[in-house]
Amino acid sequence: MTKAAFPVQKQALDTDNAALEGETSFMYQSFFGLHENPFSLAPDPRFLLMAASHREVFERLLAERGVVVLTGEPGTGKTALLLALRERLGADAAVSYVFNTTLMFDDIVEYLLDDLGIAKPEESPARRLDALTSFLSERERAGQRTTLIVDEAQHLDVSTLAQLALLSTLERETPSRLLQILLAGPPELEEKLDHPDLQPLQASPRCRLRPLDEAEVEEYVRHRLRVAGAPDTALFDRGAIGRIVRFSGGIPRLINVLGDRCLLFAYADHDHHVDGGTARRAIADLDDAAWAPRTVARATWAGLLRRLRGRRG
Ligand SMILES: Nc1ncnc2c1ncn2[C@@H]1O[C@H](COP(=O)(O)OP(=O)(O)OP(=O)(O)O)[C@@H](O)[C@H]1O
Ligand SMILES: [Mg+2]
Image (cartoon, rainbow, N blue to C red):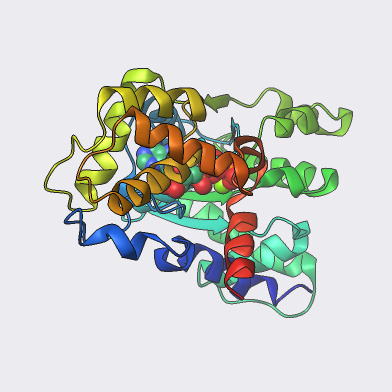
């Protein structure tokens, strides 16, 4: 049993933003009148901007039942959106969030029992599954929603995915679905679901998060500055935004990495604004460092956390 995995996944989600800020944002925060890091890499739902694609996906995830698959390139905001969904569903639904997806099916059942506060029969995996399905049926009869969110679902093995599909659609007297399961991961997740043993999942609704377009990048930068308390949300001029668009391809994680570096460079120049020249220097600096766009785009949030901790140690 991978019990130790549970505290780890909770800890990963609860990690304070400060752990992800790198070493620099504290230097410029007061200079720009910020009360926190506007470009933290943590998937903090407080910062979420409902860009067109994010809103579309969010509404579908709220509306769909059964298994739903969410994909998007690394850094497009899947985890941030799922955490926002968990908050939104919180009041009327039982929501469980699995982040550590090296778990096997029996481990996931056990995690659900723990997380949803269901008395746990110790005897066997089969009895525990029974306890879970009785709980789900009761909630369903009471018209209550239960949602399991599996982030980084590309790491689940095929048999676990197949069993999860069964769990969400167990035949009852009424054909309604017991459990909504959201499977999130990079585009490769869809390829994994093409496996012949996963036929039931192939018909499940799918949604894809898109990178931000040019206008959304500008809105995104302003939005994050506003949430972080900036008195002036037009800190970045047109030239700087254009460079951020080209560097990031509209991927929020890359916007954050570059946004942070731009503020640091402007601060070093005692300049309260970021223009195209400052952004160009920040990009050159990142290209020399481990933050090259391709590295960052491929890295997972957990990987970036490890990398930052490693750099400090
Ligand atoms: N729409 C958005 N509004 C505000 N911030 C966002 C948005 N989308 C993503 N972000 C931010 O971008 C960063 C990357 O987001 P997140 O970690 O959710 O991406 P991901 O798709 O889960 O990536 P990965 O595939 O690596 O897990 C986080 O700091 C997150 O807060
Ligand atoms: Mg993620």
